[in-house]
Amino acid sequence: MLFDSSKGELIFSEYYLEITTVVTSRYVYGLGERFSDSFRLKPGKFTIFNRDRGLAIDRGDGQQTYGHYPVYFIKENSGNFHLNYLRNNNAMDVIVQNYSANQYTFTYKVIGGVLDFRFFLGDRNP
Figure 1 (cartoon, rainbow, N blue to C red):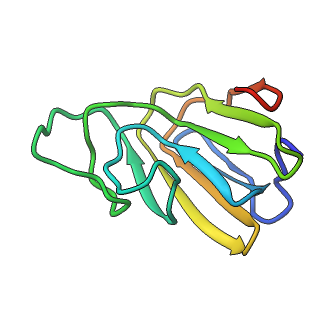
Figure 2 (cartoon, rainbow, N blue to C red):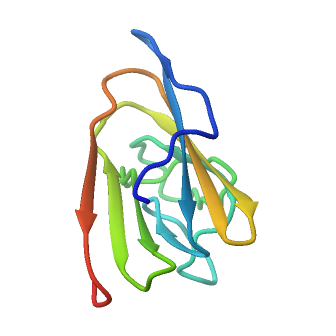
């Protein structure tokens, strides 16, 4: 399943958007400039907002860095890959949580704009 919003609320107002999706995989990557010992995404709060703070290192604790990449990359249980990109240039937090051993939730909290998701579908060779 590409996008399952059944686990959270949809809040849509002029100055605040919130939506949650569940992905069924243990192989989750992405969300921009992050520093980690692994490419796999760990649970945490990821603030996505362009800000020139060269000494800030975001390890999932909500600090901003240079890049603005609201995109995650999933290896599905089927072995195929897909990518989900939220096209929105407003500041946002993305809360990543382990819902279960084989599921993650992504909660987008955006301060405006629209929810313009783009999905890129792949096969076993991304």
